[in-house]
Image (cartoon, rainbow, N blue to C red; front, side):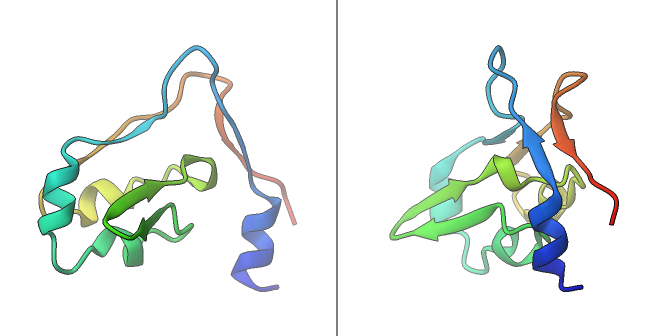
Length: 92
């Protein structure tokens, strides 16, 4: 089974009472970043670029925390979603 097929089975339950669990602290720092490792390091491709703007697709997040480690500027604020929300894995 391909990784994309496995990721399709993973669901993310958004919390309507709290904002996204991922946050770019300063978007200007992202514009200055040459390598943009967040786009390559994240296994679920949460971070993408559209023109000069970074897009955070938190619904794809696997909650691995790799993005906060990969960012050379520590510009990504990451925290676990509240209990009962966030990533929901399915077996198979």
